[in-house]
Length: 301
Image (cartoon, rainbow, N blue to C red):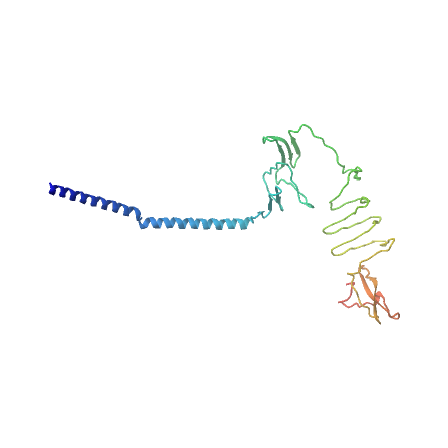
């Protein structure tokens, strides 16, 4: 009995040890991964890092090429005002505006052009259905879905007189050539003639400019030329010429101390003005023909 019991006990202990060993072996194989899996994991991490780096470089290149920031190179976004500003020429296939307003910059024109195609203006309702259409083509203008419209003459090119009502006021006229017998500004307002290159005022029977104050300003030269007559500058209080930039030329016959007074001379036929200093010596010769005509000081050259 005892022997039997001891034998049974020993057999149980042996079986328990064997099962425990099997569990330990299985746990070791589960906890400790193989070297191949470790290499695969770090390889995947490295590829993801390279992909993120390439994506960052591509994003930087796109931002630099398109000059993205608050807008793009030719576009600026103004979210506070709900506006998008375009600079220069912009090409679009279709532009949709909920309020229908397309505005330009102050002092510059807004031009809508269809290149080798028509310009179509459409008005849609709240459901997106097309209501009214205006098509501008090279061979004509077409209206669609419009009940009635009126065409009236603003002015006729056959009549040389451009008539406006008393309530109409023209603030700005842009033209390369204007032919008229008279241009008058409203009372107490200025009349401004401005050009980026050249302004030429010509009258076949003469030109008369009258005003409270006449100011001529040029970046380089202001020329007054009469073919067969005279140029007359007259004013009730006199004619004032700014002599600050008129060159000062010394005279050959000047003697004695110099006063802060000058004599204004004119080069003929160039019409250039210059001034010569006046001496306190009454015996000295102060004349326009006594100037120093050397190459470095000749005002008429």
